[in-house]
Length: 234
Figure 1: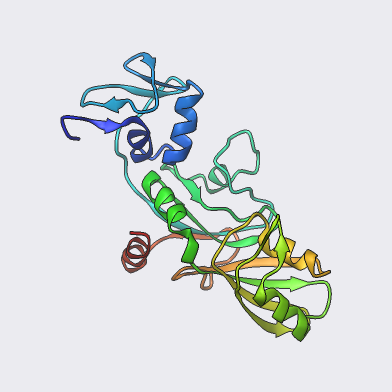
Figure 2: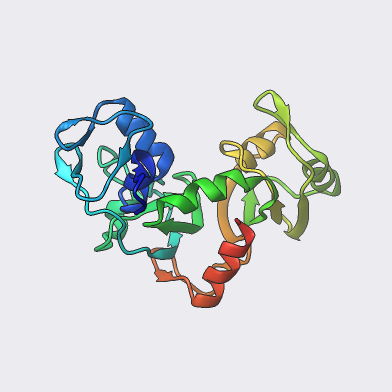
């Protein structure tokens, strides 16, 4: 740490406690102290200072882990302990981790989790071109018209979705690749076109692929995968 110290939100994120954005919220809510006084946005942490969140001391920059999970249906992409089905408690990893991005409760598939608070901000800042690929089943036939309308953009949430790649894979199934992540986007797109999603599985995030992982299985990123991820979010 330099003589000028490290910004409080970055210190908290580097400890592996949460993302920098979440750290800002904790500071604003008065849940962070620095050497016994209430921490403020913009504070800098110097060597030897003790930072506490909800009364528990942080240890500074912690070990960084990067994990891929095949999230089962029913698990919620949050670190909030008030949610009984939160993904952090489900994974029960010895190092404190949190999810990068979201995958709704009723969906399954690839989810990235990490103890690296900085990566969350970098992924979110660069989210506009990152491909995410899904396998989808709906309750009606996938027609040529349905595919074309999904690809060209669908009006949802007071906007029109960006053009995307869609490929029919069966009578009622298709593969879709998005470069944006609106709330429950695929489900809302299908509903706008008169169809309901019966199954949704994310199989790829950028170059990270689900492979043969079964629901509930997880693994750490390989060195090659981590290098590729970091290169994409610089």
